Length: 125
Image (cartoon, rainbow, N blue to C red; front, side, top):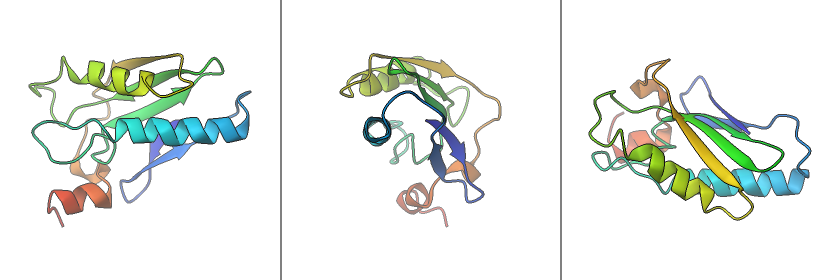
């Protein structure tokens, strides 16, 4: 699964070729997204997935998950902790064999990456 952003700024998982059976890949994808939605930036009342902080999620055939993510600002006070929160949340998904998180800042995050759900939660219409 690779996360991309639509024109509206919402994240849309895109599934690439895999040897994982489609039903299992769908379940893993849904469960990984749910795990990502359980992680919140403590300063913002919206989860990191809906904020658009997740740039890429890849599920390897061995069910190891690689994630590229960013922060709302490079100086975020939880920059050192948040990747661990994401790794722990995703690694706890049944069937996932491990998780690695890479922090990226290109492209820089901006509010256009937020989903409508995050915009409503933050009253940013």
